[in-house]
Image 1 (tube, one colour):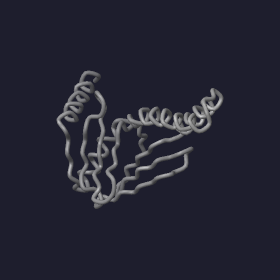
Image 2 (cartoon, rainbow, N blue to C red; image 1 turned 90 degrees about the vertical axis):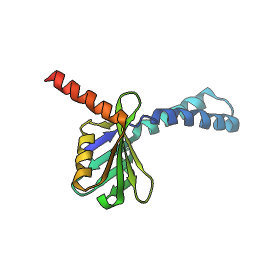
Image 3 (cartoon, rainbow, N blue to C red; image 1 turned 180 degrees about the vertical axis):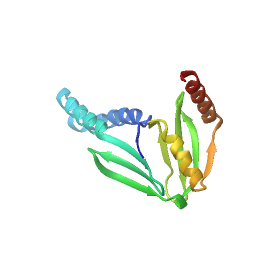
Image 4 (cartoon, helix red, strand yellow; image 1 turned 45 degrees about the vertical axis):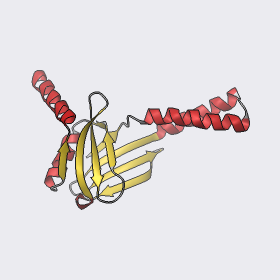
Length: 153
């Protein structure tokens, strides 16, 4: 199954980079409205074309970073490479998961769409006997989601 990732920190990082790089460019080229607008256009195009994708297969997980629909970073994780899956709360009321790997950097999955991705990730972990940790905040979000399902049916 394929899921989209909407990173919460991406907008903050983009704004930070815009300010820092504009400061460097204006020192080197001087302050110019045309240069600033051109720079802003390039940053917006690149920022809007970066996508994050996560796939759950029967026997492995795939995390991809795409730029203009081309893969610039692809990480395939077999169950024996995954040490632990930690389910946390991100922001006020959003679910997130951190995949802790034995070697390499951890994968942070914040705001997967559709939201049933977290259930599929839990199934994958149970199927392959991967350690699962749920924080109290995450358990609260699960209970809240169950209440909403009961009220809607």
